[in-house]
Length: 283
Image (cartoon, rainbow, N blue to C red; front, side, top):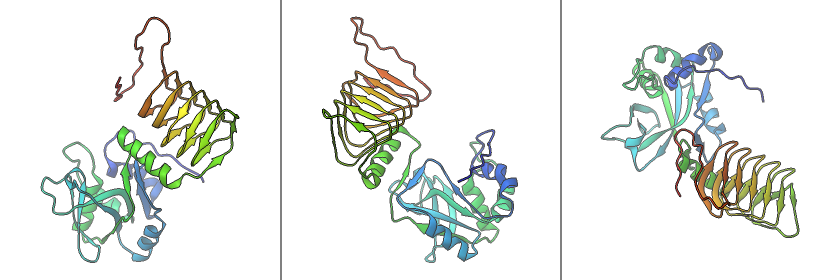
């Protein structure tokens, strides 16, 4: 696949992102898929339905128990969208907008007609509502599968568990010594080595990972290049090149790229931390 990246210089809203991409998009129809959204199905069938419909836009919806936290759509019995509202105080619908949209080129004209919201952003919900007000035909589809927003740590860990539970198959491409036990659905990447350790799936381990004298419990994803020494962990996500050493109980944790969690084994017991933005340490 070939990708082209277009930089949005400032976070001025999703509709602004479309505006920035307009010279690239031209008069083509396009899909807008927010990167922190995961759904339990592909979008091919939704795309085909949109292409055959000649509609101006199509949105994916999911019933939620707390609609006041989301953009909400009101639809008729034909699945046509009648009204959109962002995080309503008194919701008239429980159908939340999933962050996946199908647009014709008419969305650009609608974006040109909207103004920034109270938070200073051009909202894509305002653009779709403007499209409706201008007589546009906006279709909707309700998701039967799960939908997860992975924008926060706990949400990402939940998404990790769902994906591992549904999609991981056993595939051992690396090396496992005779003193180790690997059970269940575990994917071990190329050039990875497991020494004197126990791994219980579902677990995904990337390439060139070193695991020694450790226990890796279920629902853990380990990025390529990580090093895990004399540690116990489960229900964790480690991004590339992370190091975990002499940690006897790591769980429900997200460790960033190139980060280290190492227990001090000397006489002087103290925490020495380098913590990035929006981080949390619970000890």
